[in-house]
Length: 110
Image 1: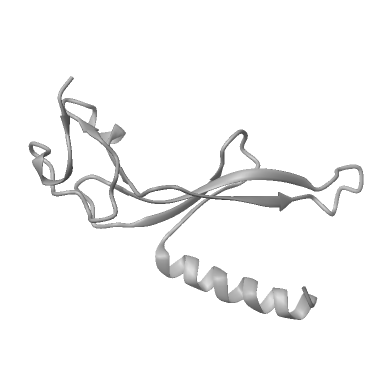
Image 2: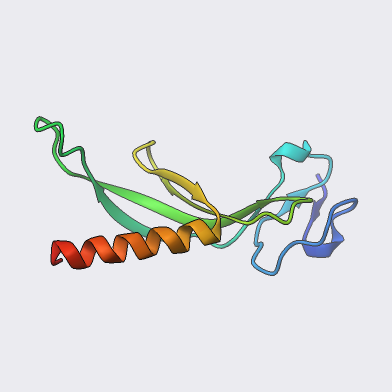
């Protein structure tokens, strides 16, 4: 198969500067996503309303993603090994979420 990078991908818009994904010619359009380099961290998640469950550490990956041919940009955070964590939001929504989380962290005293 022929691989294309950046603006050499036939019939598609040029990749954004953050895209590191290799695009393969003749793939189904819905399978073509722009993706940034991944960022990794560990999140401890839990269900405090269920006392029988314990906190669980999940390795997660964050990326910028976007469909080819679309100007929409998304920020995705997802578990690497299971479905414990999955969120995909716009940058504006991510900023709002950061503001809310910072406020809650300050209130919790952590």
